[in-house]
Length: 262
Length: 192
Image (tube, rainbow over all chains, first blue to last red; front, side):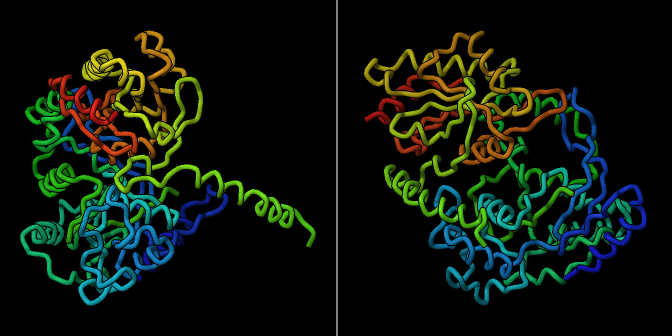
C-alpha cells in the first residue's frame, strides 16, 4: 500500500543526505518520522518538559489480519489454540474463524485486534522490527495531514475527536481507508488503539496509585503542578487507556504497528 | 563444495542429539510459568543465569534499582524480614531475587557493591542485571509498571512476587504497607 510515501522519503533523503555515504532505503510499508521532541504530558518537578526522539521508521498502517496470519503460520506457538495463557488472555484472536483462518469477522485488510502485547511484540520481532515507544507513537500521531502539528489543523482535530465519539464498526474497516498524515502514516488517530512497547510506563490508574507509593508521590504532585498542556486531551485519554492495560490483555479495538530504528 | 558449510552441517548433526537430550531432562513448563520468558540475566558475580534455573525452589522476587532512595530499600528490607520469618526448613529452600530496572547504571559491579554495602546474603539471594528489553518483558509478566524520569530516578510499582517451584505467580504483595505474614504464609504454601 502506501509505498509512495516511502519512495518519496527515500528520494528526499537521497537529495538532502549528501553527507550520508549510503542512503538507506525506507523499509517497505514504513515511513520515516523525522527526529523531534516529545512533550511529556506529566512529569516530576525535576524532569525536563520534553525530550528528543531520534528519527525512526513506522509502519504506514496497523498490522492487518492478513499480515498476522503469515506470522502465526510461521510461528505455531502464537496460533490461537496454542498461545500460552501467560502471554495472551482467553479471547486472543477471538474474532478469527480458526487458527489459520481469519474469516469474515476479521477481513485480511482490516487491522488485527484481540492481540496481547506479548503477541504484538513477538510479531514485531519475527518481522525484524519492534513496537514503537510511547514517545515515538505520540510523535507520529501528533502530526497533522498537512503539517507536523495536527493541533493547528481543523480537519485533524475533528477526526481525532470524532473517533472517540463514534462506536467502532464490526468488522473494522480496511487499513487503506484512513487519510495519511504528512509523513504518509495512516490510521493513527481514527481506527483502533495501538500497543506501544512501554505502555506500562503510564503510572496513572487507581490500581497503579495503590500499588506504587513512589508514583503516588510523583504523580499527585505532577497532576497538581506538572500537567503541561491540557488542550491535548486525546493524548491524556490514550495515557489513561494505556495505564489500564496489562500485557496479556486482548481487546476488540486494540491493535498495533511496528517501528524500526534507522 | 567441501567447505566450512559441510563441516558446519556435520557439526550440527553431531550436536543436535546432545541438545535434544539436554532439553528432555527438564520437565515441560507449566503454561502459567513465568520461566517461559527465557531471558538471560547477569548476576552480580558476572554469571549468566536464567530465572528458570530456580525451578524447584519457591522464589521471592522484586524489581528495584540501586539509586532508589525510598521505596526500594523498604522492599529489600521487607524481603529480608520475610526470609528471617520463614520456618527454618522452608527458609533453606527459598531463593530471593532482585532485578534492576536501571540497566544503564546497575551493572553487575554496581549490584555487587550494593550487595556488599547492604549486607545481602550471598547464597540465597540473586541480584540480576538484564537488557532493557528483557527487563520490560519481566515487568510485563509480573504486572510491574515503571517509568524512567530524566533525573536517573524511576517511578515504579512496589510489588513483591512469590513464585512456586514451577515459576507460577503464587502471590503478590502490592504496596509498601502490606503484611509480611501473608507473604511468609504464601511462601510456605509454595514450598509444600
